[in-house]
Length: 130
Image (cartoon, rainbow, N blue to C red; front, side):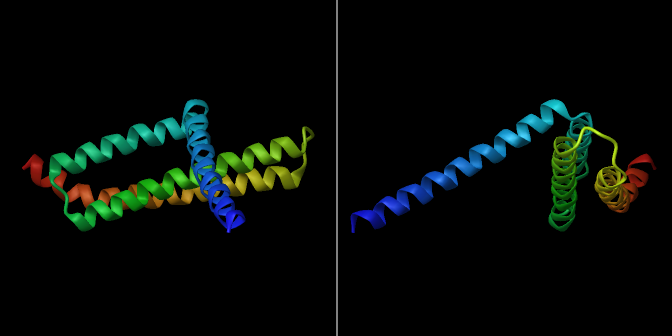
């Protein structure tokens, strides 16, 4: 019986530790990665705009998915860059491809996010300007 409760404590502790590690990684990336800082600033501007223009619940869900997806992809891109840099100091075409492809994934999602923002906010901005 006692070993079962010990297992639960270990699992609970490991889960809590994993959250600490995850938040530490996010904090480290926010402090060190210029692109993530830019995404944070743009995200805050978009959220304030959403409040100002009174976007709908559905529009909020779409905006939050775009913001979360953008941050997630940027974090993955950073992790891939770090792993590639750790694996080799020399130039290698596959290392370059891995980094470029990860950056390309971020770019694709960024373009889609801008389009989403345009679809949601442009009509509201144009109405406001009239």
